[in-house]
Length: 349
Image (tube, rainbow, N blue to C red; front, side):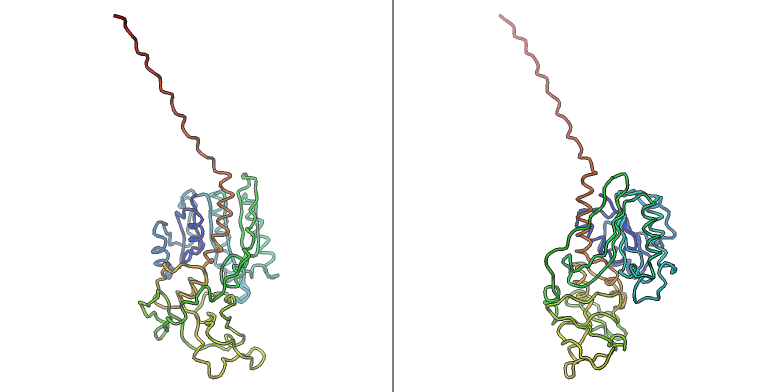
C-alpha cells in the first residue's frame, strides 16, 4: 500500500510505516536542514521540498494513505500560546485541504499534547470537525511512547481517520506490557561520546556515527529542575534542541538549592553532559544505520526531537495495515484451462 508523507522531517514516522510494510512513495519537507538526511535514508521516496501551502493535490501521486506531523511549536505548552493563530498552527488546514481532495483510504496526523490544553479547545474541535467534513471517521487519542517500547516519557496526540465508505473506525493498539530503560537503549555508548567543536559544529567522523554531544553553558531555566534520569528509568522527552537535551545517566540526580533552582552535585560536575545526537536517536528508536547529516549539532537535535519515535509509528502503522487488509480484495487466481485430449484414430489393417 502506498503512502504520502507530509512534514516528514528526518522520517521517523515514515520509517515506522515502511517497517510495517507500507511503501512511502512521496514525502514533503520544507526545512533545508533535513533534506540530505531524509534523502540518504529514504532513497526510494521522492522528496518534494516546497512548502505545503504551494502544493496542489494534483502534484501528489494517488496513495492509500496520508501521514504527517504538522509543526507543533504553536501548540506547545512551552510555546508562545498562539496555537491556531500562528501560521505554523494553520498548516494543519493545508493537510486537511489535500486530504479532502485526494480522498485516500486513511490518514494519520500527530501533534504535541499541548493541543489538549483548555486554551486550544475551540481550535481542536474545529480541526476534528474538518476531518469529519472531509469524509473520515475520526479516532483521536493521547499516546505515551513509553507504552510502545520507546525508552522515554513522550506524550503525543494522534488523529487517525478511515474514509467513511470503508464503514469502520480505527482502534488504537493496546500498550505493551514492558518498559525499556536508558540502560537498555544507550548503555553500550557511555564511554565513546565526544564533545562538539566550538560553536557546536560537528567533529565529523565519530567512532560511532553521530555520537557527539552539545556543549555550552546551562541556562537558569535548565537549572530550574532535575534533568537526570537514572540508568533504570525512562528518559525525559527528547526535545528539538541540543541546549535542552536531557543529561546523561552517568551523573547523579541534581540537588535542590532553592525552589526552581538545582545544582550539579559538588565534585561530580565532570559527569554532567548532555545526551549525544546518537543517544537521542537511540531513545527515539532510530537504528544505528540511520545516519544524520548536519554541520551544526543544533540541526541534528532538532530533526531528532521533532521526529515520531520509530517503534511508536510502527505500532500504529501495524494496526492500520491489519485493518486495511480487509478492504484490499485478494486477486482471484486464474483458472487453469483444461487441456483437451486429442483422440487418436486407430486404423485396422
